[in-house]
Amino acid sequence: MTERVAILISGSGSNMVSLVQSMTGDHPARPVLVLANSETAGGLAKARALGVETAVVDHRRFAGDRAAFEDALHARLTKSGPDILCLAGFMRILTEGFTRCWDGRMLNIHPSLLPKYRGLNTHARAIEAGDGEAGCTVHEVTAALDDGPILGQARVPVRPGDTPDELAARVLVQEHALYPAVLRRFSAGDRTPVFLP
Image 1 (cartoon, rainbow, N blue to C red):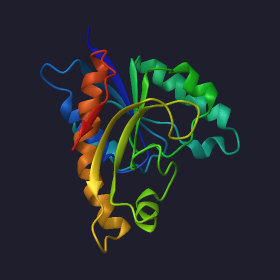
Image 2: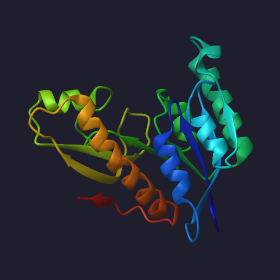
Image 3: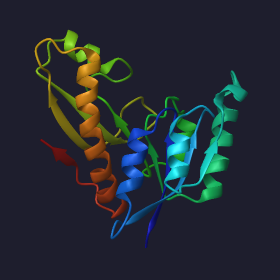
Image 4: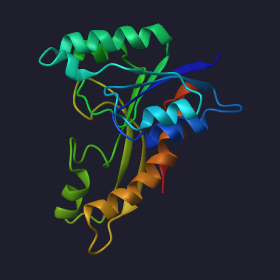
């Protein structure tokens, strides 16, 4: 049985593109929707160019009412009937009420080696801490921020004199390899973590 995947974005959608492009041939999943929380998300046009249905649930229309935003998000997702949700640069914190509905079926990619550096500014924090390596993590989404079982990690050396932008660019290359690898395994029912060198 082919798994149906919805991908949630907020920006340019580079990880979304990697995921969509990976779901071909004998892959056990197919993309059914790319949903953004803003009409200005650059990834929407990329998704349409790849032949994937798109939708927008603009969080600004629900100012101060996160529950109403999540209800609208859930309703639009349910309309497309996904089996798996992939957060790919979706910059909204989701509450327990939402994550519970998709428990065990929602993935996220985070630009650090979790459990280090949950939240934002991960690359600057790794450099400031003097870490010798950074990277990215794919994990199941739970109500706790950037938490949940780890399904994959990729490591990137921190070079002397690195800026956050330089490190971010190298980590992003690994994100584009790791997320599709984890999704392929996860959509086949295998939660064994993927570790890239």
